[in-house]
Length: 480
Ligand code: GLN
Image (cartoon, rainbow, N blue to C red; front, side):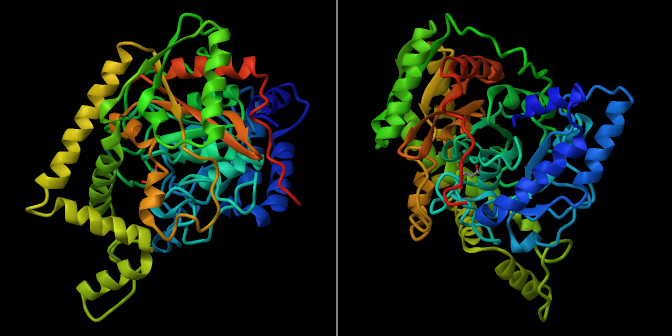
C-alpha cells in the first residue's frame, strides 16, 4: 500500500498502526532473504506502532500515523546500531537520534529497519557494503544502484512505502531510478543533517524515496525545515503538499544538451522523449539549454568528495568509538584499526583525498576543482534564466549486473555522470520513474533552482497523473 492510503485507513479506523506494522514486518520477513535490503530490523517497531496508536486515541494529529519507514544506516537512531555499511561502525550504537528521525516519530511514522548501503556512502551499486550487496527487486542478478540501494530496493518491493537515504553525488536519485521509485534530493540545507554520519559535508543531503508523488511530498514535508542543531540548515518552510497542483501550464523546462550527447541507453533516451511529449501535451514549454562546464563535473566532484572524505573520516582512529584493533603503540593501533575497519573503496578515497589536499598539490587539484565548481554553478544560473526546471537522465543506463563495475573503480565513478553536478551546485533534483527498458525501470531527472524544490513536485505530479502511475508499480520478484 501507499503511505497516504495507510494514513487514510488508519485515520478512519479501518486498520490500526499495529496491524499495518505487523503486516509490513511479515512482508519484510518473506522478501528480505532474497533482497538483503536491510542491515537490521528495529526490534522496537511494534512498540512504536502501539505508541502511535495511543497518540491517535488521544486525538493527536499524526500526518504519518503508523506508516512503516526504512532508514539508510548512516542516519543515527538512538539505541539501535548505525553501521554506515562498515566494519568500522559494526557495533556503534548512537546515543541520540538524528533530527529527521525525531521528526518522523513526531509525525507518527514507525521505523521498521535500517537499510543497506555502500560503505560510508561511497559507491553506486551497494556492492561496497561490508555486509554484502542488496539485490534489485526487478532482477535479482542486478544491482539496485547506490549508495542508498537498500532504501530503494525496500520501497520498490514494498517492504515499506517510504524510505530515507542520503545523496552526496546521486545516492538517492540513482538507486531510485534503477529500482523504479521516486527519489528526491532537496536544496542544500532544507533537510537537517544533525545525526547523519558525514561523508562529504559540502555535498551531503538527506533525501526521500517513495512510490507515489503524494507519498514523496508527505515524507519530504515531514522531515524538512529549519533545525538549530545544523548550522547549514535553512529557514525555508516546506510546502511540498500544496505543490501537488493539477496543472503545470506555463512552466518552461530546459533539456540539457550535454547530458543527452554522452552515451545513454535507448530506454533512457525514450523515457526523456516520453516525458517531454507527455508534458508538452499538458502545456509545458521545452527549450534546449547548455551547461558547457558539465564535462568537468565528475572530475571536480571526485576531488571535492575525496578531499572532504579524508578529513571527515579522520575521526575513526580506534580511539573514541568504532573498531579498535589494539597494537604495540597508539600509532600502530590507529593504523591497524583503520586498515581492518575500512574497505578498499573507503581506503582509496582517503588516499586520493589526502593526495589532492597535500602541500604542492592543493592548488593543482583542490583549488582547481573549487574553481570548476563555481563555473558549474554559474552555468546552472545561466540555464535557469531561460527555464524553470531542467531535464536530464538520472543514470545513463538501467540497473547493471553484479561485478560489472567493481573491477574498475573509474567505470563505477562514471555511473554518477548525471547526478554529481547537482550536488556541486547545491540544487534540488528528483528522479521520476518514466519508463522501462525491457524489464528494468528507467528514471528521468528534473533539476530545480535553489529553494524552488516545490516546482519539481508540481511537474512530477502532473506527469504522474497524465501517465496514470504506470511507471511506479511494485516490483514482483522473479521466482519468489
Ligand atoms: N556514487 C557517488 C559516490 O560514490 C555518490 C555517492 C553518494 O551520493 N553518497 O561518491
